[in-house]
Length: 122
Picture 1 (tube, rainbow, N blue to C red):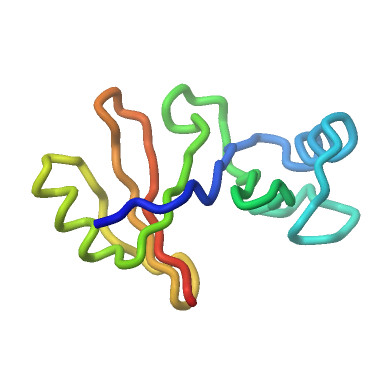
Picture 2: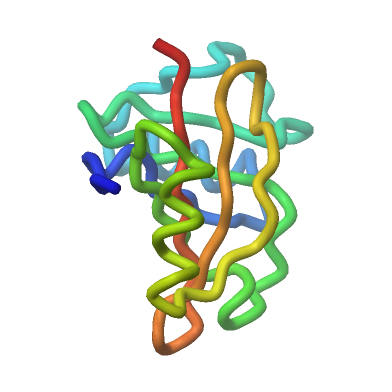
């Protein structure tokens, strides 16, 4: 198994429009997806931050742990990586298809912080 580059950092937010306005207007990030005017009903907004995407995800409720930022590492094969990590005692969830051709699984580090490993279509 080879853990690849850091691909995403995900911040769970309560007020999508307010957070998009903050990161776009005050911080100066350019929106990658979706490009529109009203983000109040969006579930996912990604910013163009180079190789590692910074994304906002709706549904945050200010819960410590659950709404902590998440990060995603790229792997070639999620099933093989899951098998190796489980052999090493890493706690992992179930593999799911994030979108067609991309598989993801969440895991927990030694202090309970969540991370993801994900394959991306070629």
